[in-house]
Image (cartoon, rainbow, N blue to C red; front, side, top):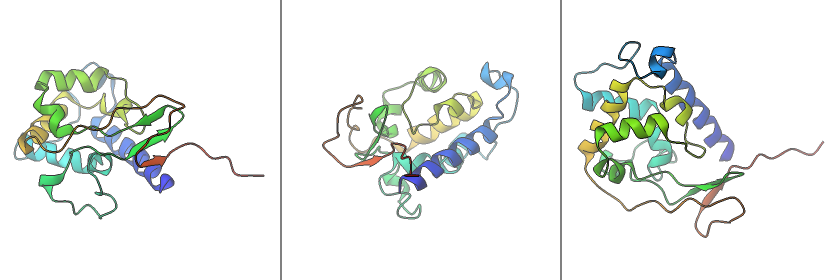
Length: 173
């Protein structure tokens, strides 16, 4: 399971890097460069969330259920932690987060926040501003749902609830 999760995280990072166009204009937040276009911002955001693999971590059981979780139950965070050398991190409830964040605050958060693994923030921070705004508008359109995610734990603390062990393992020689 850990190898599969790591593979999905790498795939998610690669997809987001391709979608964001990782050039200097992107990094500065300029409005030129590659971006997703769709019938409207909600559809563009829905597409970005899907191909970016956001539901894999932010929707309980999404990956295990083959992506068949109803949209009304998506992006509510997860009580399953990701445990590794950084401590234990939990996928945020994005539906509650956007209800308490402005669109500008969302863009600023994804451009500047330092996140714990497995969040591919190094790629998301390079996304076109219009794509970040489309994602916000999509998630916001879903409305609030779910409960806040558990607090992240520092290294050395073992979670009391379920978690995936993401610590590297060196095979015996």
